[in-house]
Length: 238
Image 1 (spheres, rainbow, N blue to C red):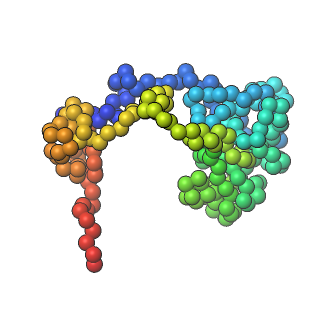
Image 2 (tube, rainbow, N blue to C red):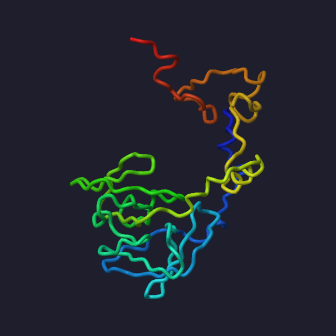
């Protein structure tokens, strides 16, 4: 029977907890509406469950919603939801109604899903062009993705872009930062672990007792390293 690597023990080990109580509110776009709606920013919330702050909105009909906060947005400002909106930071509209070159964030992958892409602090995408197949968006990874023009996105850049600029001078700081998000730190190689923690563990320190290639039909817990690789070794010149 195969062993579970440490990173896969999240479901059974008390070290990895789901910190659901840290999420102050779900952050997503409001349901799709035909009319243009205006909301007022009544608060900016620090949510430990998100890397970016959240904005608490109150609409004209007194409904309240939470969305990812953009840069240059303050309490008392107004944002709009709809097709014909202003170009203010935080306003949301379908991709088909936004001009090319616009910086956007919190992009939907399917109309009405609330936003899936570009939600982390400091992130932004750009509308490159509009084609019959859809709207081409350049993501922060420089990858271009074609999205349905009915999908909505917010104008601007996600707030909190300088979050990673402050260095972590002590290992304990990074340990607690990872623990808050249920991540394992420090991460070491499999051959440095004990035999009970990883299939590559045990033996004499970094001595590899097993090959790094794993069969496709290997048991669960043994699938580490290169799984059913097409080729191995150095690529020889032609």
